[in-house]
Amino acid sequence: MPNRFSFLTLAREALRSHAGWRPQWRSPERPQPAYDIVILGGGGHGLATAYYLAKEHRVGRIAVLEKGWIGGGNTGRNTTIIRSNYLFPESAALYDHAVRLWEGLSAELNYNVMFSPRGVLMLAHGEHDVQSLKRHVHANRLAGVDNEWLAPAACKAFCPPLDISPAIRYPVLGGALQRRGGVARHDAVAWGYARAASALGVDILENCEVTGIARDPRGGAVTGVETSKGHIRCGKLGVVAAGSTSLVMAMAGLRMPLESFPLQALVSEPVKPVFPCVAMSNTIHAYVSQSDKGELVIGAGTDQYTSYSQAGNVQILEHTLEAICEIFPIFRRMRMLRAWGGIVDVTPDRSPIIGTTSVPGLYVNCGWGTGGFKATPGSGHVFAATIARSEPHPIAAPFSLDRFVTGRVIDEAAAAAVMH
Amino acid sequence: MLLIACPWCGPRPEMEFRHAGEAHLARPADPAAVSDAAWAAYLYERSNPRGEHAERWRHLHGCGRFFNARRHTLTDRISATYKPGEAP
Ligand SMILES: Cc1cc2nc3c(=O)[nH]c(=O)nc-3n(C[C@H](O)[C@H](O)[C@H](O)COP(=O)(O)OP(=O)(O)OC[C@H]3O[C@@H](n4cnc5c(N)ncnc54)[C@H](O)[C@@H]3O)c2cc1C
Ligand SMILES: [Zn+2]
Image 1 (cartoon, each protein chain N blue to C red):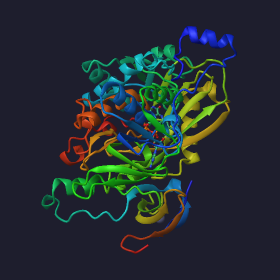
Image 2: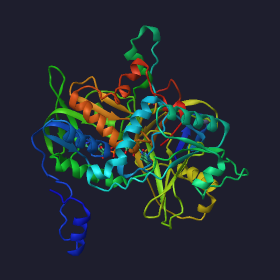
Image 3: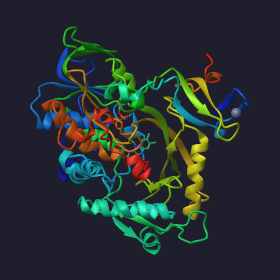
Image 4: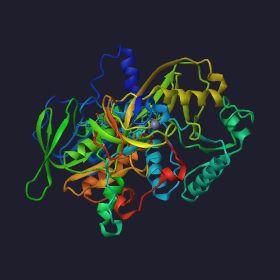
């Protein structure tokens, strides 16, 4: 068992040169021959799913299979913006469920995920932006989700580095502020869920790539998975593979309404605290916050073509940095330290897919695209219930795969062209 | 940035082009006659492979025409571009 973190244990370890800390989660080299439930993908969503399955549902033995290391996918590559001010009631319910879980997550996991609700300010640069963001503010208030409209001077007061002069190319005409929004430490989210799930008996297998899905020749139900560590039998399989979802689902013969694109982020050299909040501009494409280490964390857009290269094009970064320099002129001389990319799985309506599939025993949680980190706790929570009961959790139900057949899409893309 | 050979204009920088998704998806001849599932499959389901991908591009800031390309989605290397109706 890992040590429990408390003021007392921290003080005790400080006095004995931190010699008493044990590994935070069990990391078995070999899998068991069989599990009741296998979760494919050790990102935040997969680990959270395993944790809530073990904690809230009596389902037997659970394993998480990760082809690389846990959190090495988009979980460890994202810009960690958390908010729930989406337009449609179905989305607001899902993302706000997550924000409520974020608020208590460090205590729930006994692990500091550094959730920092410092406020997310979304900027408007034109009449269309103003109308669209105000529509969001009103829709959110009706749905019980906080979101308020700020005039330019109030935006500047909340985010002092912002240039609100009318002379710039895309002047700031106001902004929508969600005060409960903010950021969290991405690695800590993966580690915290892994540690808590492991303590409840979940086996977390790293360097274990799933290469095939075994099915019953008669009914077609999932019976196990082929992996780089051998065959593993399972009763149910939950796929939470983000950018690789189409590849995994093809192993069960399913075609998905998904396309995978590279999405990039970059960080600057570290500086003293200068940026108190998260600021986003969808129109000119800039997202920025400052990490506790002092780096500016900047999110760019996706490449225009599908790719699994995990790199991304330099002109995309340039476009974002131009926007940052325009609205935050104090950053013009800042040096950038590094940039990287992750592969995001994008749905036609930019809303996730959570639920059952046409293959018995196969469940999928994907399509979070450019904005799923914020949903990690809520996504895992409702997906765990969906797998355990073999029917969609009420919050997950509208996000079923068959919405593309019925036409009940949840078109957040058309509503706002929002990226994160 | 990719260097893309438009079949009409020759090699030009990616900035001049718009990616237009998977190629060779045939629209059902009579949409009203197909099932909702078949129509959804046509509209939304994509191969999204890690490997060779046939895709449409439009030379938006050039001749304006659509064409097809075959690109590897891990290396992004384009092995062929060809006009609509042609084989790769
Ligand atoms: C640059 C960037 C910035 C972003 N910014 C934000 C943001 O500010 N706010 C926000 O809310 N979201 C953001 N996102 C999106 C967010 O990161 C994702 O939606 C989210 O992390 C998806 O979570 P996940 O756990 O499903 O994915 P992942 O962490 O990618 O986990 C999937 C795991 O599945 C594993 N896997 C895949 N195939 C197999 C296989 N065959 N066998 C075994 N394992 C396999 C992968 O190795 C991976 O670890 C951003 C993404 C990127 C790339
Ligand atoms: Zn041309």
